[in-house]
Amino acid sequence: MSWDQILNLLISALFSIATLALISLGLAVVFGMMKIINLAHGEFLMLGAFATLTANRLGLPLWLSMVCAPVVVGVIGLVLERGIIRHLYGRIIDTMLATWGISLVLVQLVVIAYGPATQGLATPLGSFRLGNYSVSAYSLFLVAAAGGLVVLTYVLFMRTKYGLMARAASQLPQTASALGINAGRINMLTFAVGSALSGAAGALLAPVVGVVPSMGMAFIAKAFMTVIVGGPLVLSGAMSAAALLGSVDNVVSYLSTPFLGQGALLVISIVLLRLMPNGLSGKWRRQL
Amino acid sequence: MLQVSGLHSGYGHKTVVNDVSLQVGSGEVVGLVGRNGVGKSTLLNTIMGILPVQQGSILLNEVDISHQPSYRRSSYGVAYVPQGRQIFPRLSVLDNLRVAAIAAKQNLGSCVEEVLAEFPALTPKLQSQGGSLSGGQQQILALARALIIRPKLMLLDEPTEGVQPSIVDVILEKLGEINKRLGIGILLVEQNLEFIDVLADRVYVMDKGTVVAHLPAGAIMNDKRVQHEYLGV
Ligand SMILES: Nc1ncnc2c1ncn2[C@@H]1O[C@H](COP(=O)(O)OP(=O)(O)OP(=O)(O)O)[C@@H](O)[C@H]1O
Ligand SMILES: [Mg+2]
Image (cartoon, chains in turn brown, green):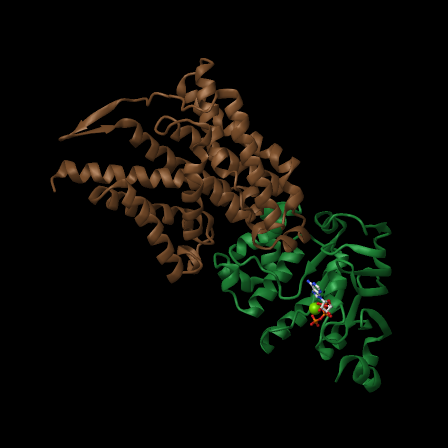
C-alpha cells in the first residue's frame, strides 16, 4: 500500500468512527444515565438536521445554523420530557411505546412542513488532494467536531456540579434523593442534554447525508448497537464501541463492499455481546 | 426532635409498617431492634421519604414532613446511613463526599475538610472508587457522607453488618463522639445488642411491623423474655 492509500483509509476510518460516535452520543447519555429506551432518538438527529437546514434557508450562515440545532432540539427534548416522558420513568414498555409514538408524530410533522423528499445541503469546505486521492475537508472537520463534542460531554459530567449529581442519581437514585438531590430536575436536564447532543450530531451530519424526514430510521439501529456494545460506561464504553465498530465497518467496506461492511458490523456486535454480555466496558473501572 | 405517630407504610398497597409511634429527643441515641424482615428498614425509608406514608405522621422539630419529597427532608437536619451503606460505586471517595455537600448546598471545601479531619482514614483513599472499598471502609465513608450536611439527627441502619470487628470498634467510638461532642441524635437499627447497649439510652423492639416493647437500653441485655420472643436469641 502506498502512503496516500494508507492515509486515505485512515481518514475514512476516522470518518466512520466519528459518524458512529455522533449518532450514538446523545443516546448514550439518555440510555446510559437514565435507562430510557428512546425510540425517537433517530428523529432527534433528524430534527437537528432540519433545524440546520431551516436556519440556513432563513439566511443564517451554515456554521451559525449548526449552532442553532442543539438549542432547538434541546428545547424540544425538554418539552417532551416534561410533557410525556417524566410520567413514565421506571416503566420500560410504556416509555418505548411513547417514544415510538413521538417518533411517528415527529416524522409526520416534518413531512407536512417540508414534504417527503430529500433536501439538499451543500457540503462546505471543498476538498484537497492527497496523492492520488481527493479528500473532503468537511470530513476532517466532522472528525474534529465529534471529538470536541465527546470532550464537552466528558467535561459536563466529570467537572460540573450538575454532572456529579447526575452520575450519583443514575447510580443510586434513592440514596441521591435522601442526600437532597432533586432527581426530577436532574432527569429533565439530562434528557435535554442528550437531546441537544443528538441535535448537534444531526446538524454536523446534515451536509454529508440526505436530509429527509425518514433519515432517523437509518441511524437508530446503529446507535443502539453502539451503545449496547459499549456497555455500562456511558462515555468511554460507547465511544470505544464506536471506534471498534467504525473501524471494522470501514476495513470490511474497503476490502469488499459497504453492504458487507454493515453486515460485518452486525456480526461483530453479536459475537462481542456473546463473549461479553455486559458490553465492552462491563469490567472497566472508569467513572464515565 | 423526631416524632413518628401512628405510621403506616409499605410497598404499593401492601402495609409493612403498621401503626408505629416513636420519638427521638434531641441529642438522644435510641435503638430499634427486631428480627429480620419486621420492617425496620421500611420504617427508616419512610422517614426519609423514599417510601410514601400510607397513614400517620412524621414530625421533625415540630414540622410535619410526612408529605415532603425525599430530597427536601435532609434540609430539616436529618441524615441517613442506609442498610448496605449505598456508597456510589462509580464515584471516587472524594466525589461521594462532594456530592453530599453540593446536594445540601454546603460550602464545598470547608465541610469536606471538616469531615476528613473527623475520619482521617479516608484521606489516603480519596481517589479510589467507592465500589472498591471494603465493607468497613464503606461504612465509615457512609458516616462521613451523612455528617457533611451537619445533621441534627442521624438514621443508621445496621452499621456493623458485614464489617470486620476491628472497624466495628472504630464505628462504635465514632458514633459515641458524634453524639457527645456534636450533640447529634441517633436512631440506631442494629442486631448487635452489645453495640446498642453501649450507645443507646432507650430501645424500641419491633415485631411484624409494630412496636411491641419500649425499654431502657440496659434492660434489653438482661431481659431474656424479650430477647427470646422478639429477637430469636
Ligand atoms: N422492595 C420491596 N417490595 C416489597 N416488599 C418488600 C420490599 N422490601 C422489603 N419488603 C418486605 O417488607 C418486609 C420488611 O422488610 P425490611 O427490609 O423493612 O425488614 P428489616 O426489619 O429491615 O429486616 P433486616 O433486619 O433483614 O434488614 C419484609 O417482609 C420484606 O419482605
Ligand atoms: Mg433492614
